[in-house]
Image (cartoon, rainbow, N blue to C red; front, side, top):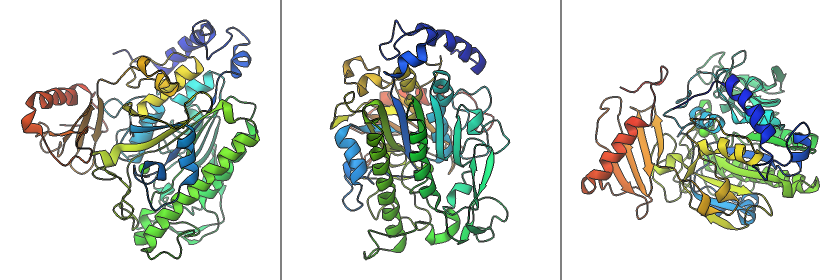
Length: 479
Ligand SMILES: [Ca+2]
């Protein structure tokens, strides 16, 4: 497999963009005026990422109690994916897959640890920026600390506002956030000792003034307004409904429990629901902003979550059936940990009210963007463009031979989805050649019946994929 360095690729891409006009309807005219000429036809791209939102947490995915009218409307006006997967079952690796187009068998970042993206890592933001997009990220990054090579401004983003550090992002009332490379002081006061992590980011606020999510929602409106002449790419990486893990069972921090304050529910569950409905309102305001600016028809909006629902900060995925029909939650490689809601809306281009069962994943986002803007995707990535599915040409859609995940906590795990089959191997650290559980998702979406003994040939194939799907990693080794 050929891996190009970023420098080589960008050099190559300059040529590709210039000559793409003839071969791509979306790109428009080539040559010196190519960006201006193509701008009309290339959509703005807004990618909204929720944090730890489950497959069953949205009305359009079967949620009965938590109200999400605005996100449900996205689905009514766009395409809802039933078989879309996050990059990982926890934050950082999932986001690395999204940004770089690799699954966790090839990605640099395969777990939650302080490993920053390197200059040689090519992100979707760099590709879009090079293609003439104004690129912004608002929310949580998690792929590089201050002064590292991994900060958003060194990874293709023109504008950045939010949390660099994931532990910092646990606290919804932080003392500061980052705007590009500057610290922005907030009015909150934080007790860092409460979390047992003295002087490390995170902690629990003793004075709560600025709720970070509300700042992100306002920043998103501002970014769209300021870049209305487009084209722009906004990666809105919200932190809802993640818990503040340092706040014990009071971790579902939200300024108001409305509209659920009077419910007869445990407080953390009121918080979980109130967070999601609050986020939903902000999605509605963002959509209204697009309409108000006349950008509605020329903006692709995608909405998804970075992994399954959590059981932290007092949260309880059982209470609202946050995983829907799926087994497990965050940190599992069962479907509940990795299968996520995914909605895509682009009026006039994506069929309203459509549902797709295309098997797809976070590593498909980068090549999807490349095809949309008319640049060649880097060689050797794991992702496959979803554009044919999105634009109603499913017959042209290339399918994945298989999807792969590896997870480096709780004894280490591996999983493969191949067609309707799902293979899961537990305790890989202890037993790297241990048994593989096999499920047929077609008739067993809840992964209740391990049918491995009945299908030894399928198990052998999945076992071979588990070996072949990965390259060694110095940070995340498997035995
Ligand atoms: Ca997460």
